[in-house]
Image 1 (cartoon, rainbow, N blue to C red):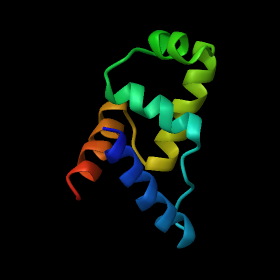
Image 2: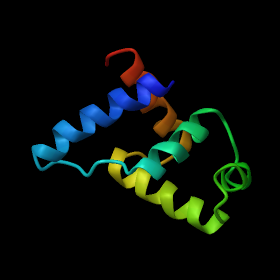
Image 3: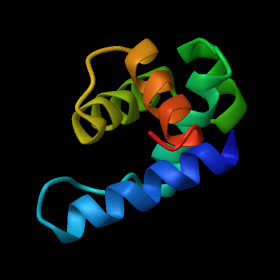
Length: 85
């Protein structure tokens, strides 16, 4: 899964350089990895020692940057990157 997220980040960097999208921060990548694992916001907050409000903030940013509307779509973007799509 980490490889898939890193591939997604590389794709994002290319899109960022082309002026199309912003790149995920390190913390957003951590949150995304936990989303892919199926963790709830409360669990993500506990694992990263941050508040649920901060988790929600990161998730909103992830959705905007990945141009998705749900956790499922975000996880699918990671899966698709892992498969080279």
